[in-house]
Image 1 (cartoon, rainbow, N blue to C red):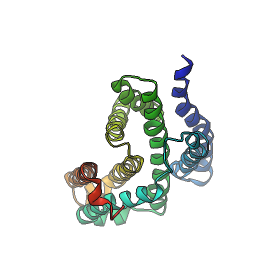
Image 2: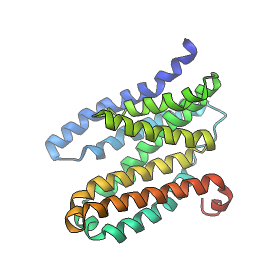
Image 3: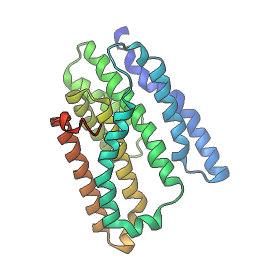
Amino acid sequence: MRKYLFLAYPVGLYVIFSLPVLFLSATLKAVFGTDPLLTHAVGAMGMALSHITTKRKRMTELGAVPWKRIFSLAGIMLIPVATLTLSLTGKAFFKTITGSYPAIVLGTFFWASLSEELLFREFLTCRMQKTGMPRWIVLLLPALMFSLCHRPESLSMLAQRFFLGTGLGILFLKTKDLALCTATHWIYNILIYTFHYTFQEVSIIYSPARAALNALLCLLSLLGIVVAYSINKSKFAGYT
């Protein structure tokens, strides 16, 4: 059983950094009205940097964190998403956006995506494969842990995050590409957050159907880039 103790590591790290941040975010929201998502960046950054400088450093089979490729891939993925969003919902987007939006999508979502891909995809997948666990467990168990650590408010949210975790797990198992998984996760978070953030205003100025269409097209563009990159990385080499 001792050889499976590593499974508790991501959850333990998540608890250590998330609980203090929950209290901090509640306090800042009550006193200053600060969006809790801004505070959550602190916990996510702490998890990522703590893991990178300790546990991951000792995993000699892994290369350095591909910072440049993460940002390059995210930039490539963001271009069609931003273009579609501004073309289809531009008036509502600019009317809704506030000062906290850029900090959340560029700061909080980056650190959240990086920390979760480091822990639930790279770390768990590599360690579970070393123990000889069946492939289906290597895929589904990290996805379940990923979903539960998000403290889902309902079964539908649990399922949504489980499917996201499974999709990212498949992507990592196929490519072993931390940069691709992190960038995909980051842009997905931006896309979903923007959809919910602007939905009411888009529905008023345009229609709910316009909001749904924009989200669908953005998701398809993201999926298309991920598939194209996975099939032939050399085509993107000059850009990443």
